[in-house]
Length: 443
Image 1 (cartoon, one colour):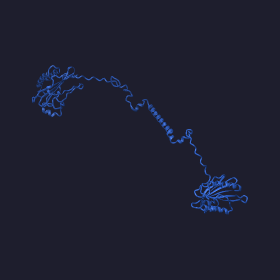
Image 2 (cartoon, one colour):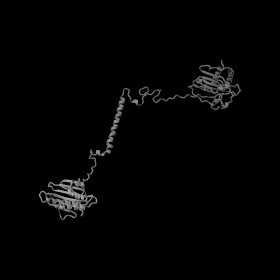
Image 3 (cartoon, helix red, strand yellow):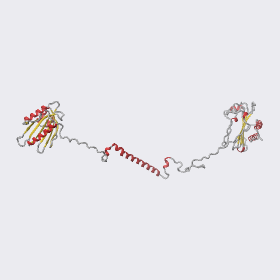
Image 4 (cartoon, helix red, strand yellow):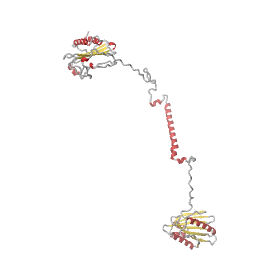
């Protein structure tokens, strides 16, 4: 039997509680002393199906210093499915341990059905004969068979890679008791669509991967798109019609109310009709009144035009121009009996004396056979001419100066002439009274 088999049996006995820790250390030291001269195997020795042992021979202190940056300490390789157990600070070598102190660390990990996994880290006690302290830990495992791994410590000890501080060696209990950790119960949560690991009801159906606008498409053709386009077009038409109705019924009505007023005359308030204005003027501006009968002359011209057209006559136009008249206005009507009524206004130019024009016109008629009629109103000169031959017209004229109803002073003539002397007298008296009442003469 080789020393590895004996060491394995020794580890099994320690894990099973058949021997104490002191006896285990004594027997192990003897085996290590026998095996120090032997070369380490190049590969781990195959063990029985229930056990696996790996031995790493101690190396020299110089070699460890050269290989320390490239070869870190081999950590424990737990099985992937084993639950992790808490490690105690007593398992690690204290950082304050001197380099010449040879130590050993033994870890036994229990497996299922009484099996254990033991890890022994041996120190080198050949150089300084330091203290051969030992630490042993047994951790139960649940599934794997026993696995033993022996790691020999270099003469100077392992590098200070342990982050935890160790307790004094004397405080380590000889037989620590560890309770196996219970495995975590399997979760029984079920997915939202049901239990027994079932997939959603829609999984695998054609509608499962579809999302977005393509869900509106039917697999049989373009009917779905046609319906969607028709619906959108109908909505747009309805909105457009509603907007147009609101615009024409509300907004357009407010903008142009006069357009809808003739359609509903009964709904509009009745506005009072404005009072009728004066009838259109039939005579020129100035001291004129409306004359009965048919109009035969109605105009206003400048004095030069009056002279050119011989209005009233060639001789009279020359007299008016010589006495400062600037404009000439005339209004004459004629009855069927050939009776004519007429009013003339000779507007004086700025700064000219109307009295001089009045005297010149009265003398002109006096020189041509018109007799002065006495008893006239102050400032009014009346003359008449009676025809002595058949077919000749008789006439009666009055001249006076007024400033009423004119922009400048004017010489006014009121005349009536025709074939019947009696009719002439009556018509003249009536017309002169009407004109003097609206435009009184200047005395």
